[in-house]
Image (tube, rainbow, N blue to C red):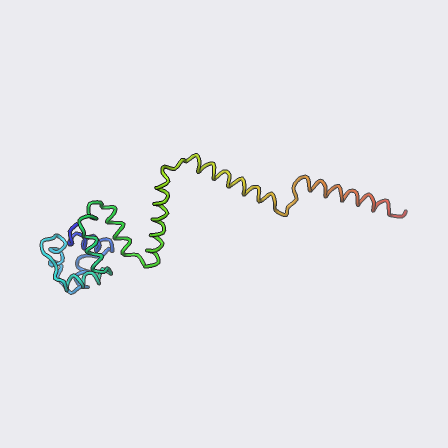
Amino acid sequence: MSLGRTLKQIRREQGMTLAQLAARVDSHVGNLSRIERDLTKPSLELLFRLANSLDYHLADIFALSDGEHSRDPKRLALNTAFISLLADDRELLLEFAKLLKSRASRGPVDLSEIARDASEGSRSTEFDHAKSPRLDRNEKLDHNETLNHKEKSDHHDQKP
C-alpha cells in the first residue's frame, strides 16, 4: 500500500476528518488530500507532524505502507490495530497470537473431543459438589437412625 493510502487509512480508523488532521499538523486540506491520493509526497517535516498527530511512530507508518503487507488487507488492519495498542495490550495480543499458533500446529480440532472434555469437566464438578459437607441420602438415614435410637433410649430412661 502506498504511503498516502496508509495515512488515509490510519486517519479514518481514528475517526478524523481531513480538516481536523490539517488543523493539527498546520497544513491545508487540499495538500493532505493530494498526499492521501498519492498525487504528491509529503515533506519529511510534514510526515513527522502527521505521525505525531496520528499517534504513530514514523517507522510504523512506513512499515504499514510496505508493499509486502499491503497485499492482505486483514494483515494491514491487524498491524494497524497492533501499533495503536498500549504496550501491555501489545504483549497480551502477542501471547494470544502464540496460543493461536500453537493450536494451529496441532492440526484440526475434533469437536467431539471438546464436547467429551466439557462433559467430563462437568461430571467432575458434580462429583466435587457431592463431597460437600451436605449429607447424602445414606448419611441422612444413618443420622436419622441415630436420632431415633437416642430418642428411644431417652424414652426408656424417663421415670414414670
